[in-house]
Length: 447
Image: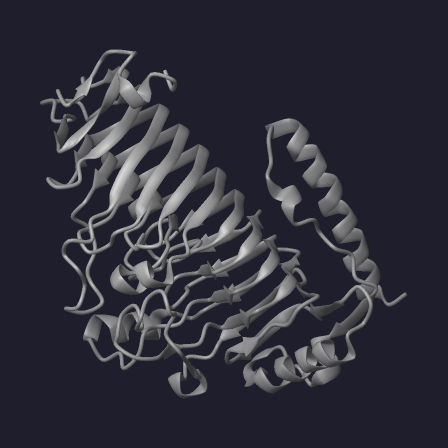
């Protein structure tokens, strides 16, 4: 057995043993929906001319290796091994029944030459590029209509070298919407684990129109001032499990989405069955977010055991007129927040529109939001809940929440409008719109 093949085998076995130990030690996990696969067939990027010197462009090598996986169709799939080294590359497509395995010290580094980035069609639920009209740049790792795809390894790195893209955004010279690091569309059975993602040009990991997705044991890094570098954005997807990860980026750590205004309404695919568990991180924006693109609906989201430091907003549920869609049955619990501008924000006036053709009468419905067991230190404003006059938010249930401001004059207060629900054991005392009764309407079964 080749040395690197044996190394992979031992690492996968160790990962499986570590996973079972952590589950026993830390409690629940949803990761069983996509189990780790051991693949007998293994190839190395070096077999296809890959050069890990940080200067040679390896796009052709990646494409040829994946072409081989796609067309030979080995039983059980094939593992593509990336040994230690820095592999400069443009974007490439993954294929079904493959594992992309980054060894310790392996770096897949994105080229900073925009001419090497192909354009792809806008998502139908967005109608255009998220930043610019028309097409958008392809993600570094891309896939459409795939199944059984694993991205894993020994904490190797996928580096988007995003600073050139961030500068184009700042200087308003972008011609098309910036690329993600990873975007998988219309796919199922996706596992991403034990990889470091850094310096994405735009959103880091974007599963869209997908089902059965597991993302765990990842580290996602970008400077706090890097624009729109969201960590993980499940979008119009179902049965998504995000666990045991560290995220420090320039935008939301995790944001659940489902399409943009009239395009998302027409496409009509919600995000549902999303579990977010044991995430730690920091950002000038939100820790756990829903929205603001929620036009297909977002239902049945559970986020728990979250630790947030140096945040803009701890928990942020955001939508706007023109979005339509329903945000329902969102549960967030066991959250620690330290040093934040706002602890909890639920708002109906957040986010822009794709064009002037959005319907201002397409109002979102927000109901059944349950937030409990939250502790915050150095939180400037405890909470802000602003519904819509013609579509008030209902069933907002708060329990056992303590959000403490900085020493000195107390400004850690709540501000609310067009909202109903209940609160118990909330400090500072919540706004009058949230009664303290335990037997209030939609919250009665929750308390």
